[in-house]
Amino acid sequence: MKQVVSEPSYIIDKSLAICQDNWDLPAHLGLGQLSMEKLFKTVEIEAKPPITVLKQGNYQLDVESMQFDDPLMTNRKISGEQLLNRRIFNDGLLVMHKGEVLHESYRNGMTATDRHVIHSCTKSLCAMQIAIAIEQDLVKIDAAITSYLPEFSQHQAWQGVTIQQVLDMQAGIEYSEDYSDPDAHYWHYARAAGYYPPKAGEQAIGAKAWMIENLNSRSHEPGTNFVYNSCLANILGMVLEKVYQQGLANIFEELLFNHVGTEGSGYFNTDPQGFPITEGQLNLRLRDFARVSALLINQGKNAQGQQVIPAQFITNLVKPSLQYQHAYQASVKDTVFPHGQYNNQFWVLNAELQQFTMLGIHGQFAWFDLQRELMIVGMGSYPEQDGVLMMKSLNTLWQGIAKSIEL
Image (cartoon, rainbow, N blue to C red; front, side, top):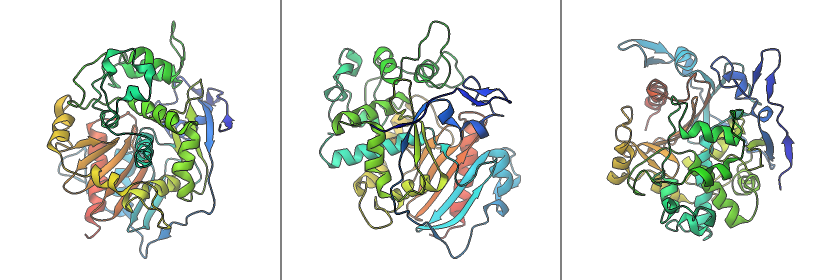
């Protein structure tokens, strides 16, 4: 069992009254997202030496001086500095091409040694470990979730829902993650998991208990509609704990972090009951996020050539699929990525171009262009959880950098 490195004080800055109630207000995000261990019980994912040195490229990409189409004001140009600061609200950015760092920068008070919460990018890292478990024959991709987690068998809605359908968020379970709706399932879940104080009559019962109690009905036939549901990543985390017979923080450490040479430890925030919040509460340094993410542009291998995640997992991610594209658009239309797919807890933005991303609220991402062997990693404090303008701004950055890199 990992040792707890912090117990929550629920206060980030007493003088500014930044606390569990308001850590994610736009004015507070820059500090709040670097201080999550003050809001949650936190366990450490230890760094294992030696550190993998990130190679520097022969030239450095001056992103701030580049010119981009302004995602907000049509037919106008904007500098990279303005795009990062005024459109994306970026905290840290790292660009890696063919294994070499071309750009690394920090803003909004963040430094290279700060651990920034990566929100839902944690989901993608969880899926990478599911892929390892599948290769080790501990998990069957087409097996029912209930065969690993019988506690969900009490609900008819879960009968026949497979590991793959949970990975693809096509489980068909009734759930709303509309951040603009205060009555959406997400907010009830988030308070139960410890993101915010419980309201009158509520209790912070933890992620597991909330999911078992509330994810109990169907909205669609499994395998037909993509419905974004953060809780499904927690369920995958529960599967990992069941098959490896140990805590999730240990699993993250042994399957991923021990193999990529991180320079600092990671912090994994847990719910009040001690379960690591797999859907969004891993905190990493920017460089260490890049070290883990770089597995995806190196056919699953680390810098030493060791196969860490199956290469087939990456190949499968970028396969164009009409079925996945139809499911992706079935419930909510995506106007920024009309040919997008969601597969294995990754957003596949353009399968034909082999471009995909991990994505977290407030502008966290690790974006990949396999054809260019290009990776762009970012941490941000966008003032809303998500939205069309945020995604348009991020895509402007990604495509602008990609166009400056020759195929």
